[in-house]
Image (cartoon, rainbow, N blue to C red; front, side):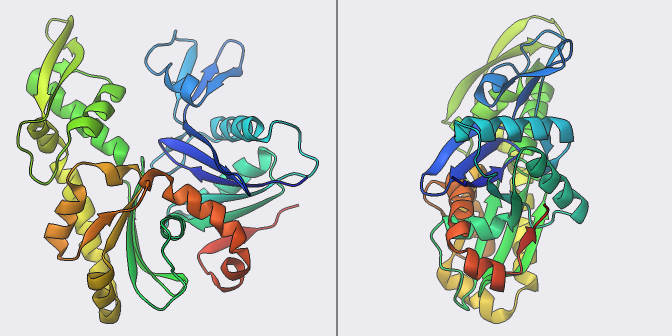
Length: 339
Protein backbone atom coordinates (compact mmCIF):
# COMPACT_ATOMS: atom_id res chain seq x y z
CA UNK A 1 0.00 0.00 0.00
CA UNK A 2 1.30 3.46 -0.94
CA UNK A 3 1.76 6.10 1.72
CA UNK A 4 1.38 9.86 1.46
CA UNK A 5 3.74 11.44 3.96
CA UNK A 6 3.78 15.14 4.85
CA UNK A 7 6.93 16.56 6.44
CA UNK A 8 7.21 19.93 8.16
CA UNK A 9 11.00 20.13 7.98
CA UNK A 10 11.65 22.68 10.72
CA UNK A 11 14.90 24.02 12.12
CA UNK A 12 13.82 23.10 15.67
CA UNK A 13 11.31 20.27 15.13
CA UNK A 14 10.21 17.84 12.45
CA UNK A 15 6.51 16.99 12.35
CA UNK A 16 5.36 14.13 10.11
CA UNK A 17 1.80 13.40 8.99
CA UNK A 18 0.38 10.36 7.19
CA UNK A 19 -2.76 10.44 5.08
CA UNK A 20 -5.75 9.32 7.12
CA UNK A 21 -3.83 9.31 10.41
CA UNK A 22 -2.90 12.97 10.90
CA UNK A 23 0.23 13.80 12.90
CA UNK A 24 2.21 10.67 13.72
CA UNK A 25 5.57 12.10 14.78
CA UNK A 26 6.82 15.33 16.38
CA UNK A 27 10.52 15.25 17.23
CA UNK A 28 13.43 17.71 17.56
CA UNK A 29 15.48 18.12 14.35
CA UNK A 30 18.64 16.67 15.87
CA UNK A 31 20.96 13.85 14.81
CA UNK A 32 23.64 12.21 16.96
CA UNK A 33 26.51 10.79 14.89
CA UNK A 34 29.34 8.51 15.99
CA UNK A 35 32.51 9.58 14.16
CA UNK A 36 34.41 6.40 15.10
CA UNK A 37 31.80 3.95 13.83
CA UNK A 38 30.59 6.38 11.14
CA UNK A 39 26.94 5.77 11.90
CA UNK A 40 23.91 7.57 13.30
CA UNK A 41 23.45 6.81 17.00
CA UNK A 42 20.10 8.56 17.57
CA UNK A 43 17.65 11.03 16.03
CA UNK A 44 14.95 13.26 17.46
CA UNK A 45 14.31 13.34 21.22
CA UNK A 46 17.08 10.86 22.03
CA UNK A 47 19.62 12.91 20.09
CA UNK A 48 18.31 16.18 21.62
CA UNK A 49 19.10 14.85 25.12
CA UNK A 50 22.72 14.41 23.99
CA UNK A 51 23.31 18.07 23.02
CA UNK A 52 26.23 19.36 25.10
CA UNK A 53 26.57 16.00 26.90
CA UNK A 54 28.53 13.72 24.55
CA UNK A 55 32.15 12.56 24.30
CA UNK A 56 34.10 14.23 21.50
CA UNK A 57 33.67 11.38 19.01
CA UNK A 58 29.86 11.65 19.16
CA UNK A 59 28.38 14.87 17.78
CA UNK A 60 24.76 15.93 18.26
CA UNK A 61 23.93 18.36 15.45
CA UNK A 62 20.99 20.25 14.00
CA UNK A 63 21.39 19.61 10.24
CA UNK A 64 18.95 22.42 9.39
CA UNK A 65 19.90 26.03 9.95
CA UNK A 66 17.72 29.10 9.35
CA UNK A 67 15.03 26.96 7.70
CA UNK A 68 17.32 25.36 5.11
CA UNK A 69 19.65 22.36 4.94
CA UNK A 70 23.16 23.07 6.25
CA UNK A 71 24.34 19.44 6.40
CA UNK A 72 23.02 17.39 3.51
CA UNK A 73 24.21 13.95 4.65
CA UNK A 74 22.85 14.33 8.17
CA UNK A 75 19.50 15.64 6.86
CA UNK A 76 19.15 12.61 4.57
CA UNK A 77 19.96 10.26 7.47
CA UNK A 78 17.44 12.05 9.70
CA UNK A 79 14.60 12.03 7.14
CA UNK A 80 15.31 8.38 6.27
CA UNK A 81 15.22 7.38 9.96
CA UNK A 82 12.02 9.30 10.66
CA UNK A 83 10.26 7.86 7.58
CA UNK A 84 11.32 4.38 8.74
CA UNK A 85 9.93 5.10 12.23
CA UNK A 86 6.47 6.13 10.95
CA UNK A 87 6.11 3.48 8.23
CA UNK A 88 6.70 0.46 10.54
CA UNK A 89 7.47 -1.75 7.54
CA UNK A 90 9.12 -1.59 4.17
CA UNK A 91 7.02 0.10 1.52
CA UNK A 92 5.29 -1.91 -1.16
CA UNK A 93 5.29 1.32 -3.12
CA UNK A 94 7.60 4.21 -2.26
CA UNK A 95 5.70 7.07 -0.58
CA UNK A 96 4.77 10.43 -2.04
CA UNK A 97 6.18 13.14 0.17
CA UNK A 98 5.14 16.78 0.51
CA UNK A 99 7.69 19.04 2.19
CA UNK A 100 7.37 22.54 3.58
CA UNK A 101 9.88 25.27 2.69
CA UNK A 102 10.19 28.97 3.69
CA UNK A 103 8.72 31.40 1.14
CA UNK A 104 12.16 32.91 0.37
CA UNK A 105 13.94 29.61 -0.30
CA UNK A 106 16.24 29.61 -3.34
CA UNK A 107 16.21 27.07 -6.19
CA UNK A 108 19.45 25.56 -4.88
CA UNK A 109 17.92 25.13 -1.42
CA UNK A 110 14.75 23.66 -2.93
CA UNK A 111 16.85 21.14 -4.85
CA UNK A 112 18.71 20.14 -1.66
CA UNK A 113 15.41 19.44 0.14
CA UNK A 114 14.05 17.42 -2.80
CA UNK A 115 17.25 15.36 -3.13
CA UNK A 116 17.24 14.65 0.61
CA UNK A 117 13.66 13.31 0.46
CA UNK A 118 14.32 11.25 -2.69
CA UNK A 119 17.45 9.66 -1.21
CA UNK A 120 15.39 8.86 1.92
CA UNK A 121 13.02 6.77 -0.20
CA UNK A 122 10.36 9.10 -1.63
CA UNK A 123 8.74 8.28 -4.97
CA UNK A 124 7.62 11.84 -5.71
CA UNK A 125 8.30 15.05 -3.85
CA UNK A 126 6.01 18.06 -3.65
CA UNK A 127 7.00 21.37 -2.08
CA UNK A 128 4.55 23.75 -0.43
CA UNK A 129 5.48 27.14 0.99
CA UNK A 130 5.10 27.59 4.74
CA UNK A 131 2.65 30.55 4.79
CA UNK A 132 0.20 28.62 2.57
CA UNK A 133 0.47 25.46 4.69
CA UNK A 134 0.16 27.48 7.91
CA UNK A 135 -3.09 29.14 6.83
CA UNK A 136 -4.59 25.89 5.52
CA UNK A 137 -3.65 24.20 8.80
CA UNK A 138 -5.16 27.06 10.82
CA UNK A 139 -8.49 26.30 9.14
CA UNK A 140 -8.65 29.49 7.08
CA UNK A 141 -10.27 29.39 3.64
CA UNK A 142 -7.68 30.89 1.30
CA UNK A 143 -9.57 30.18 -1.92
CA UNK A 144 -11.69 33.36 -1.71
CA UNK A 145 -10.47 36.74 -3.02
CA UNK A 146 -10.16 38.02 0.54
CA UNK A 147 -6.87 39.07 2.10
CA UNK A 148 -5.51 37.03 5.00
CA UNK A 149 -2.20 37.69 6.71
CA UNK A 150 -0.06 35.08 8.43
CA UNK A 151 3.10 35.43 10.51
CA UNK A 152 4.71 31.98 10.79
CA UNK A 153 7.61 31.98 13.26
CA UNK A 154 9.58 28.76 13.46
CA UNK A 155 12.98 27.87 14.86
CA UNK A 156 15.02 29.28 11.96
CA UNK A 157 12.84 31.62 9.89
CA UNK A 158 9.88 33.94 10.25
CA UNK A 159 7.59 34.07 7.21
CA UNK A 160 5.20 36.99 6.81
CA UNK A 161 2.72 36.76 3.93
CA UNK A 162 -0.59 38.06 2.64
CA UNK A 163 -2.59 35.37 0.88
CA UNK A 164 -5.65 35.82 -1.31
CA UNK A 165 -7.40 33.64 -3.91
CA UNK A 166 -5.08 30.64 -3.48
CA UNK A 167 -1.84 32.57 -3.82
CA UNK A 168 0.74 34.69 -2.01
CA UNK A 169 0.27 38.38 -2.91
CA UNK A 170 3.13 39.79 -0.83
CA UNK A 171 5.62 38.09 1.44
CA UNK A 172 8.90 38.45 3.29
CA UNK A 173 11.02 35.84 5.01
CA UNK A 174 13.74 36.62 7.53
CA UNK A 175 16.16 34.48 9.48
CA UNK A 176 14.86 35.84 12.78
CA UNK A 177 13.12 33.20 14.85
CA UNK A 178 13.37 30.89 17.86
CA UNK A 179 17.08 30.05 17.60
CA UNK A 180 18.02 33.74 17.28
CA UNK A 181 15.95 34.55 20.39
CA UNK A 182 17.75 31.79 22.32
CA UNK A 183 21.17 33.09 21.20
CA UNK A 184 20.22 36.64 22.27
CA UNK A 185 19.18 35.41 25.73
CA UNK A 186 22.49 33.51 26.16
CA UNK A 187 24.42 36.63 25.09
CA UNK A 188 22.49 38.91 27.47
CA UNK A 189 22.87 36.63 30.53
CA UNK A 190 26.59 36.25 29.74
CA UNK A 191 27.13 40.02 29.53
CA UNK A 192 24.95 41.02 32.49
CA UNK A 193 25.63 38.23 35.00
CA UNK A 194 28.90 36.78 33.63
CA UNK A 195 27.24 33.36 33.60
CA UNK A 196 27.30 31.18 30.50
CA UNK A 197 24.07 29.20 30.12
CA UNK A 198 23.21 26.48 27.61
CA UNK A 199 20.88 26.58 24.63
CA UNK A 200 18.22 24.46 26.35
CA UNK A 201 18.24 26.71 29.45
CA UNK A 202 17.77 29.81 27.27
CA UNK A 203 14.88 28.15 25.42
CA UNK A 204 13.23 27.19 28.71
CA UNK A 205 13.51 30.78 30.04
CA UNK A 206 12.02 32.14 26.79
CA UNK A 207 9.08 29.77 26.96
CA UNK A 208 8.34 30.20 30.67
CA UNK A 209 8.80 33.90 31.51
CA UNK A 210 9.10 35.97 28.30
CA UNK A 211 6.84 39.02 27.84
CA UNK A 212 7.88 41.30 24.97
CA UNK A 213 4.87 43.64 25.29
CA UNK A 214 4.61 44.75 28.92
CA UNK A 215 7.17 42.98 31.11
CA UNK A 216 6.50 43.60 34.80
CA UNK A 217 9.50 41.97 36.48
CA UNK A 218 7.10 39.67 38.36
CA UNK A 219 7.82 36.51 36.32
CA UNK A 220 11.07 34.98 37.57
CA UNK A 221 13.10 31.80 37.33
CA UNK A 222 16.48 30.42 38.38
CA UNK A 223 19.01 29.63 35.63
CA UNK A 224 22.22 27.67 36.14
CA UNK A 225 25.46 27.83 34.22
CA UNK A 226 29.22 28.39 34.45
CA UNK A 227 30.57 31.64 35.91
CA UNK A 228 32.99 33.04 33.34
CA UNK A 229 35.40 34.57 35.87
CA UNK A 230 35.42 31.83 38.52
CA UNK A 231 34.97 28.95 36.08
CA UNK A 232 32.61 27.31 38.59
CA UNK A 233 28.91 26.37 38.48
CA UNK A 234 26.60 29.17 39.58
CA UNK A 235 22.90 30.04 39.54
CA UNK A 236 21.14 33.39 39.19
CA UNK A 237 17.52 34.56 39.31
CA UNK A 238 16.34 36.30 36.14
CA UNK A 239 12.99 37.96 35.35
CA UNK A 240 10.86 38.76 32.31
CA UNK A 241 12.62 42.16 32.21
CA UNK A 242 15.92 40.38 31.48
CA UNK A 243 14.31 38.38 28.67
CA UNK A 244 12.71 41.52 27.24
CA UNK A 245 16.06 43.35 27.29
CA UNK A 246 17.60 40.41 25.44
CA UNK A 247 15.01 39.84 22.71
CA UNK A 248 12.87 42.99 22.37
CA UNK A 249 14.93 44.22 19.41
CA UNK A 250 14.53 40.84 17.69
CA UNK A 251 10.76 40.88 18.26
CA UNK A 252 10.56 44.38 16.79
CA UNK A 253 12.37 43.10 13.68
CA UNK A 254 9.41 40.77 13.08
CA UNK A 255 7.01 43.70 13.60
CA UNK A 256 8.96 45.70 10.98
CA UNK A 257 8.60 42.86 8.47
CA UNK A 258 4.83 42.87 9.03
CA UNK A 259 4.79 46.63 8.29
CA UNK A 260 6.91 46.20 5.14
CA UNK A 261 4.59 43.49 3.77
CA UNK A 262 1.53 45.70 4.43
CA UNK A 263 3.25 48.60 2.64
CA UNK A 264 3.61 46.55 -0.54
CA UNK A 265 0.09 45.07 -0.48
CA UNK A 266 -2.88 46.43 -2.50
CA UNK A 267 -5.10 48.77 -0.38
CA UNK A 268 -8.16 46.51 -0.73
CA UNK A 269 -6.30 43.63 0.87
CA UNK A 270 -4.99 45.83 3.69
CA UNK A 271 -8.63 46.70 4.40
CA UNK A 272 -9.43 42.97 4.56
CA UNK A 273 -6.64 42.42 7.07
CA UNK A 274 -8.04 45.14 9.34
CA UNK A 275 -11.25 43.12 9.60
CA UNK A 276 -9.79 39.58 9.35
CA UNK A 277 -6.79 40.20 11.60
CA UNK A 278 -3.28 38.72 11.52
CA UNK A 279 -2.83 35.00 12.29
CA UNK A 280 0.25 33.92 14.26
CA UNK A 281 1.49 30.36 13.71
CA UNK A 282 4.61 28.35 14.53
CA UNK A 283 6.33 27.85 17.87
CA UNK A 284 7.30 31.54 17.99
CA UNK A 285 3.61 32.47 18.13
CA UNK A 286 3.68 31.35 21.78
CA UNK A 287 6.29 33.99 22.71
CA UNK A 288 4.71 35.94 25.56
CA UNK A 289 3.24 39.28 24.50
CA UNK A 290 4.15 38.99 20.81
CA UNK A 291 0.55 39.11 19.51
CA UNK A 292 -0.13 42.25 21.57
CA UNK A 293 3.14 43.83 20.40
CA UNK A 294 2.26 43.30 16.72
CA UNK A 295 -1.30 44.52 17.20
CA UNK A 296 -0.18 47.67 19.05
CA UNK A 297 2.41 48.60 16.41
CA UNK A 298 0.47 47.67 13.28
CA UNK A 299 -3.07 48.65 14.26
CA UNK A 300 -4.73 45.41 13.13
CA UNK A 301 -6.01 42.69 15.47
CA UNK A 302 -3.55 39.84 15.94
CA UNK A 303 -4.39 36.40 17.30
CA UNK A 304 -2.66 33.08 17.85
CA UNK A 305 -3.97 30.11 15.85
CA UNK A 306 -5.20 27.02 17.68
CA UNK A 307 -2.24 24.75 18.40
CA UNK A 308 0.13 27.00 16.38
CA UNK A 309 3.09 24.59 16.45
CA UNK A 310 1.16 22.02 14.41
CA UNK A 311 -0.52 24.41 11.92
CA UNK A 312 2.03 23.93 9.16
CA UNK A 313 2.01 20.13 9.58
CA UNK A 314 -1.81 20.03 9.46
CA UNK A 315 -1.70 22.19 6.32
CA UNK A 316 0.80 19.82 4.71
CA UNK A 317 -1.50 16.90 5.50
CA UNK A 318 -4.52 18.70 4.01
CA UNK A 319 -2.50 19.63 0.90
CA UNK A 320 -2.87 16.05 -0.37
CA UNK A 321 -6.65 16.19 -0.05
CA UNK A 322 -6.65 19.53 -1.89
CA UNK A 323 -4.06 18.40 -4.43
CA UNK A 324 -6.44 18.90 -7.36
CA UNK A 325 -6.85 22.57 -6.53
CA UNK A 326 -3.29 23.07 -5.35
CA UNK A 327 -1.46 21.57 -8.29
CA UNK A 328 -3.69 23.04 -11.01
CA UNK A 329 -4.30 26.52 -9.66
CA UNK A 330 -1.65 27.01 -7.04
CA UNK A 331 1.54 28.72 -8.08
CA UNK A 332 3.06 28.28 -4.64
CA UNK A 333 3.28 24.50 -4.84
CA UNK A 334 6.22 23.20 -6.81
CA UNK A 335 5.98 19.68 -8.23
CA UNK A 336 9.12 17.63 -8.74
CA UNK A 337 8.40 14.36 -10.55
CA UNK A 338 11.77 12.61 -10.62
CA UNK A 339 11.80 8.93 -11.40
